[in-house]
Image 1: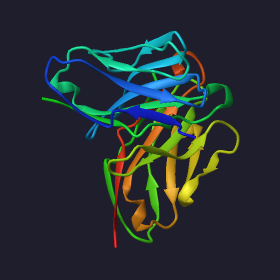
Image 2: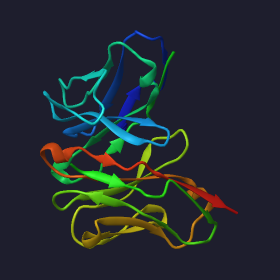
Image 3: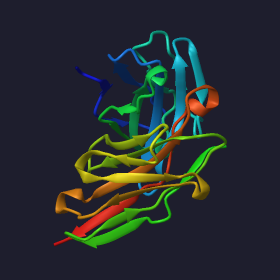
Length: 113
Length: 115
């Protein structure tokens, strides 16, 4: 059982470039989340989704976009990368109908130079 | 708005000593509460969770936590710490539907264990 899979694991971007962080889960969870983690700041919620076709902003959505066309996939898009987006990004999923905890991917370490 | 406070940024304990990590939350109804652990360079692993029922929750690796509604707290405890427990610990609060479905994390407590 793969759980939550994030790709890539590492990436270096130049300022102004764009990229998509991929997140896939195979647990048929309805809820999915994107967080960023900066040293000493804990995890900040970027966007979340409660089901296919439904997304909503979290605490720090500026500079990011998401889509949820299927239950399994929840990609995070950076359109114009900035140094402030250097961070570790975590995707998570959860099944609220069965009161499960959130399951996390292994993270994507992104550096913008 | 929901929030979590972990007042201790860094804690150092000796191996074999007891441990308590503090977590205070703000939430409008009965919360779902979680403790996660993160080792360096790794993702987050669930230690334990509280949804309802018994307020003393047992988790993995010998950890437990107690939900105290009157104090809005969900402190994590372990009677005897092992060197392998050195990691960062995160408390989180969430709910089941609507805007409460988002999970909010505290800023974490880094645990150092001395031998």
